[in-house]
Amino acid sequence: MRIDYKLNDKFDLGLVIPAFILFCIGLAAIYSSTLHNPHATGNFNKQLFFGAASIILFFVIYSLPTSIFKTLAVPTYLFSLLMLLVVLVIGRRVSGAKSWLGLAGLGFQPSELAKLGVVLILAAFLSRKNSAIDSFKDILIAVSLGFVPIILILAEPDLGSSFVFMGLIIVMLFWKGISLFGMFVVLSPAILAVSSLFGVYYFIGGLVLVILSLFMFRKDIFFSASIFTINLAVGFFTSYMFKALKQHQQTRIRSFINPSADPLGAGYNAIQAKVAIGSGGLWGKGFLAGSQTQLQFIPEQWTDFIYCVIGEEFGLIGTLITLGLFLYLFIRVLKLASTAKDEFISLVLIGILSIYFIHFIVNIGMVVGIMPVIGIPLPFVSYGGSSLLASMIMLGIAANVYRTRKNYT
Image (cartoon, rainbow, N blue to C red; front, side, top):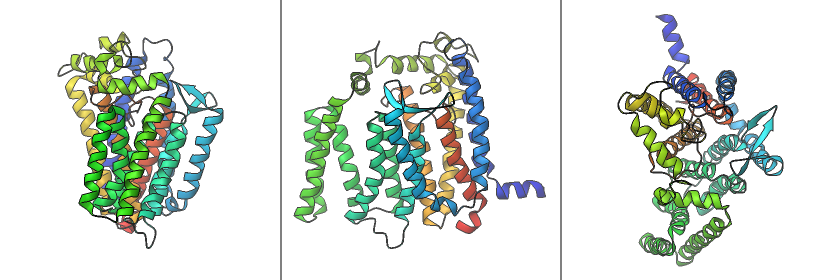
């Protein structure tokens, strides 16, 4: 009993066990989806290798002094920016995006490190003394810190990762306590950017809503005009960037609006994923028995569409278990963040939670057809060394905080 108590006192099994089970579920799905694919037969062994490496890295992060994370904020952020610049120069192109660096025969995606870098630098900036989150200056600096890597990632181009960065910036600002108007300043350009992709009438409608909101907030006329001008510029810039994207990326975005319009092209994966997940029924077709999976109806199903492997072979029960494990993990991290008295620690944890949750909601949303196919892996489950290592590093930080929680909660 004493041993169990001491273990639970220093080690949060509620964080580690769900992540480990999700990793095992991912291994089973990766093995099944690559079994009959001669071009991916080594992926299962690679995932095992990265799993072992990520566990070692987890314990290294877990054992560090918790105070070191604030010290590492600026170096991690600057190093991640350097890696994003390097990948633009010497990176290799995968699926139309120049977002990978080759290392000893293995691929590494710097954007995964950059997510942690942004979390740390934003937490350090927002938790500094005399910070004024509702001042336009602080909002501008905070958003700029997040948008520098976004610009570099869009140059690759990698729409999926840039979407995650935008989400974590908003969540961290909200957790800091930004006012309703401050949140409007941050969110309105994003809303205008999305509306501009749906057409002119949606864009005009978005502008009308921005004008009405500015009247409601009753701010200074020059300040309101500046906000409106920024929103207008973002809308036009997004439209320009959309036209500058490669054809397959434009098609992916259009297929989000109507996947059935291109059932053999951009909408193919989304349609086949829904077929696979629906055919699993309550208990699934059984391990290695999914027809959609074994006949490879969905290309590279072991990465972004791995959730439909779970749905087809393990059924509704398997998908609900997977969802339950994720939700329990999210609740544990949220509890740590909400009880932490140290603002920097609390912001770091909520940033980690936002990365997990955005990946979770977008990835599963892609599979069930309610989110665009933008290439985001499912944490701990999808094949990919960079994603797994990043997920375990962040889990290590959360476990580290739990270990020293008496000092920070």
